[in-house]
Image 1 (tube, chains in turn brown, blue):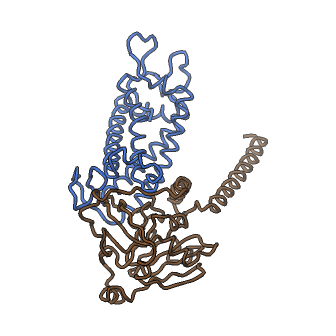
Image 2 (spheres, one colour):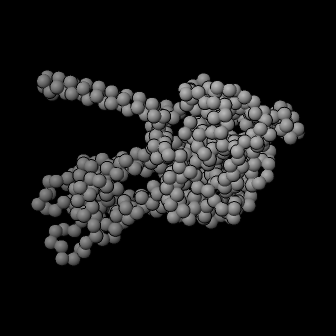
Image 3 (cartoon, chains in turn green, blue):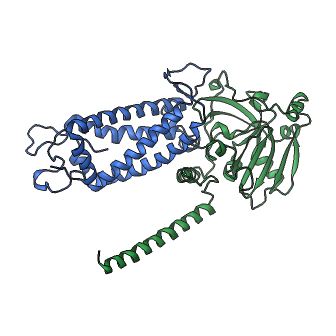
Length: 253
Length: 218
């Protein structure tokens, strides 16, 4: 290869690399500003996670509603995955009918609060019959009653810096939602199942319902929700306990 | 996937363009990217399926409901669905973008019309290339099976169906979509086996080299 060619080649390659890199950097910045980068965007599968999340966020930008079903379509039986926490603090609350239980709402909110089950029940309720699929492949349809998470968040007063809502359970489980999902009208803090009080194996006293995502985002036995602008300081920093088990943070699938 | 061959002579191009490659560069590149992504999808698809190797019809299905088909496979719940799903989606993106490039180029260069549209073998002055059955099979794979796996894959997404509910209601429900997804994948694997068998029959090295370099060895 001649000297000229190789020099020209070098310059061209260099310019192309620089242009490509800065183009990617600009794209990444824009994507980040519009909330299109998931917290678990790193690693070998990061590109796939990011493409899926960004594409679905753009597609569902107008609060599209998950499908709702007729009463006659409710599943006769709901398989139960896992057991209620055995730890003493939970068992004591369960024995007392959760009268002493409080949901802690904190983080980037104007009015941090502790909400009782009675208070949550006194708020405007929403009942919806939705489909829930487990990431394993099985699924069921059930009727859920609860207060929209958006109502509780607005009551507490979300600060402008807020980007995520993380939620924690009495067991070690925790997860988080971006603001579009947290403020979605079907995202519920559910305390009722098929017209009954939420039974313990299904997450009493309160569980998250996120009908536009897979089952594992619907964390049971909630004790705390916190509004935050970063997930880096929580757990492994990847937005939920799921990535620790190899699962995606975003589960709109 | 426009590979294979049945006739050993350079066939896709006619004699007056004998120097032209047997397969265009776009066909060759997209073929191997597709091969890679298909294996990624297949392996990860099996990993996902093994968490619940039971198929249903309708909207819902679980261990407490009757199944459509109990696959003779063990239930494996050792955390393989996490990476399985991540690999499946990464490979799906590669497969779909690569497939779009292939289809777009196939339309623009008339690859489909010239090489894959069915035509009678009789009365042809030029040496025949793929026979009618091969042409229909390739078209079925490109325009029916792959789109069907994409459709049924999207139909299993609660976020996507919140925007386009007809994707799943048109199939009879989320579990029906899962079952059809599995069936379509099964037909793609069947195609792959026959495809590789035909390549072997037609001369493995020659055919593979033609799909890499564009030229037959002879």
